[in-house]
Length: 204
View 1 (cartoon, helix red, strand yellow):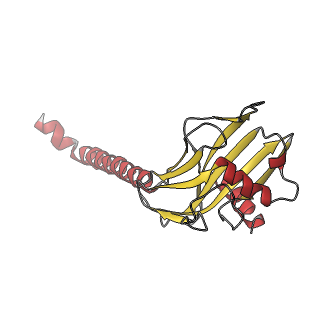
View 2: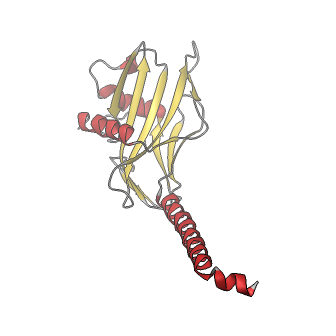
View 3: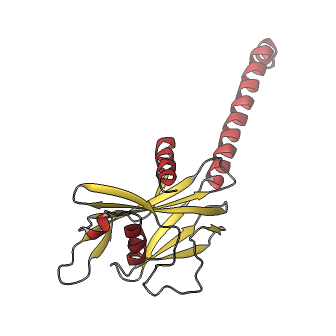
């Protein structure tokens, strides 16, 4: 056995070296993947209260990195048309009994685990309606997409999450909101983020 080892010492050294290198590559991959997961944003969008237009939209930061909410975009779908408008600024015309102590803008920093109430769906729709002279808010809405846009020190571009709600017409009663998914969809593709930036630019 010793003679065989002495004969194949060079080959064994190569095998040991390759095995060691492979172990370090796997370890490095695990380490980098863990760091990426820690720096990845995770924005939660929930509806509190009744599942109608009086429901309040809550935004939470579940990522490890602090974020700064840059904009809130509403995409409204009605009668085969869609419009996207920013509702981040409260303005002076909000008439749905918002607390006067509330900040005039929804732009705010959120540390890990922080939560912010951005208002009732009805209030957000009021602001969206003022964003267009011919707004789908006046029509029978079929879907509302809420997109939270933020920035973080961990990335050089925006981060965003979106949650969609189907609007079920209530007839004589209030319209009902049915979320299309359990959780907000994290928007990570470069194409979608570029599209969001274009929507924000149009709403300047």
